[in-house]
Length: 154
Image (cartoon, rainbow, N blue to C red; front, side, top):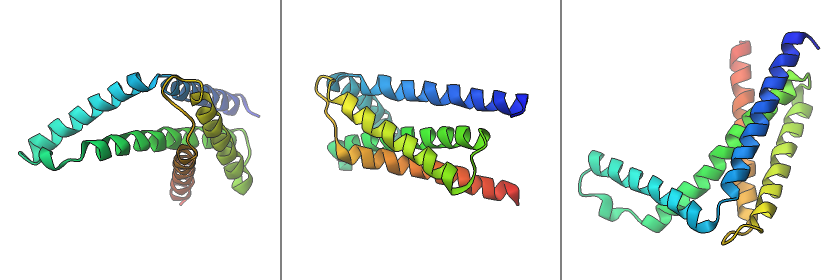
């Protein structure tokens, strides 16, 4: 492996580990702390909607919005992880379907371990549905990487 290629792989490996750490730290937050963060995001969304479409925020179902924000956070976090992991796999020299499957497997295993981790966090617990959401996010990220790669090759 060339020195530059090795440096690129190392850089993205560090990025993967840092992103996994961010996911771990987020999952380690007790339920009440996590809910506070979600509530801040909800306030921002409501304030933004109020500026765009005044007097329509009463139509917003706060519980549904809270659920959507939390599940989209799962999806997006693992989308980024999928892109980072597939980048490491590709820069290390593994190509094609094999590289995609390895990247996806790493992301799914991490999603499962993340849900197991939440079993030990006050007020939180493992949810198989979140593993599916995380896996879908990873697949989307890996697919995005593949799609952009196809466009760049042309």
